[in-house]
Length: 256
Ligand SMILES: Nc1ncnc2c1ncn2[C@@H]1O[C@H](COP(=O)(O)OP(=O)(O)O)[C@@H](O)[C@H]1O
Ligand SMILES: [Mg+2]
Image (cartoon, rainbow, N blue to C red):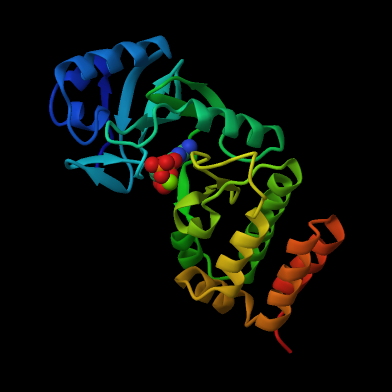
């Protein structure tokens, strides 16, 4: 891997960094406003590293709302989500309040602070679920990690917070070096929708036709698709612990 690029926030005035801070296109006033906003968070340096790149600058990731990079805050490396200038969201405060709620049930990266254009949170140094599954072909720890992800989804269901994008789990679950999975991106989360966290992720990992579903089946053994569909239906109808545990048991037992 290339050496990380660590720069003081004043450097963000210059290209190509200005366009990263104000993706996809910077203008002078917006850059200045954002540098000031970053300063108020206590961020002095940004670190450019990671598996994605924008304008040839390495970053942690990119979505439709934000660009994630590493920020240095009080001597610690944290994750900084930068609101895209072209995002169809007025600010990151909604995401911050949803992440706060997720944190109360020990889900998601820990929130540090948030303003209109920036959200600072715990940095999850690891691999997105598809890559992680590709690298971990043994039944253990795959089983433990996938079970933990389902348990986290259960806690979100139980607290009434719907993530909203867990059927797109390839981009929204990161597993760190200690094999601890984290659900990220609470941007489209809501407390006013019927929760579908467990059902969305189960469908995706165990019952769908995605590459993740194929890798999971390869590592864990072929599952019983019809029984999973049935258990999902029962759980969807009544999201109690008993139905959840039954679903877990079905998802993780091999087809006879
Ligand atoms: N806390 C974090 N630690 C490490 N990487 C992150 C973190 N948050 C986001 N990322 C990376 O940045 C990408 C985009 O972030 P995300 O919150 O999904 O933005 P969007 O709302 O635009 O989809 C993610 O897919 C992930 O790769
Ligand atoms: Mg996203």
